[in-house]
Image (cartoon, rainbow, N blue to C red; front, side, top):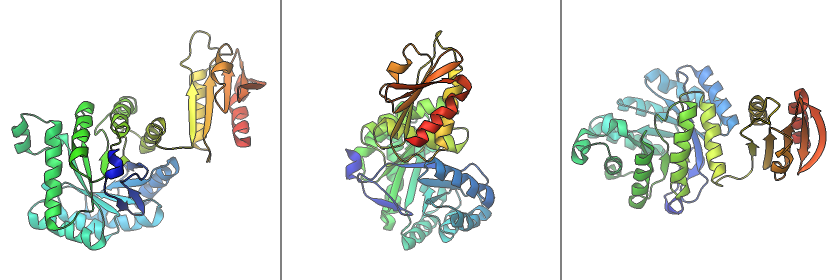
Length: 351
């Protein structure tokens, strides 16, 4: 497993690399300058299971806000910097636990060195970020187009710039909106570098398309033992990013515990509003403090429902205007449709 051989990097108390659990990361979409809104969103992300949060730092005001934001949250904060090295210096000064830069767009070697030395002084990790949309012109010309090999070459070139300054507390990120290219790039770089890798499919799209692309891409990479932190990038509420990332990890067996919901796809036998009910069950468990592994089945009819729910800890199977409450494969009671959700919640609390 590549992940067992990577360097350990500490991000504000969260260790990644060398077999440590894969950390879930997200990014705020509030204005970083709005401390109250940003803290509120981060607290919601914490509740959803986010391990590391990244905030855009497009201005000195945003950099200054990091100090106040840090006071109100409980997870490490990464400052996302582009173009202006002074923003990176200010972010470090205001307590960022890690900074994300692309040395190629920070400026001259002196400016890059100033950032690296400031990070080194506080032992703050630097995430070197490269993506297919900002690949250097000379690399595109070398390979004829954007390629996985080009992404890796760019990332390792940027890493060497920082290593030559005398710092190796680094995390690498190589992202593409092309899923297959992204997978290939990670396969290549895992053989060439021992730094922890942050994995994601950039600009993956809306919740629907983005979840599919991210599950295929991130899931494939993680299944090969590659990757130390992940972000599911979605055009939407970042809390959904965390739910999706946690589900990818759980599906791959990389995290234990928590809730698994299984529900049938519905068919002509379905006589209750299963789609709405399954959505409400999912929302309900997200808002419950469940610290054990729990499998919940939400089935649409009493023909196959009890059988399909047998392996679940608790489940419901719909009928005409009513449904069955099932526990460990045994029918407990019959419940009117409008009372199914409350009955299920009551049994979950008992468990």
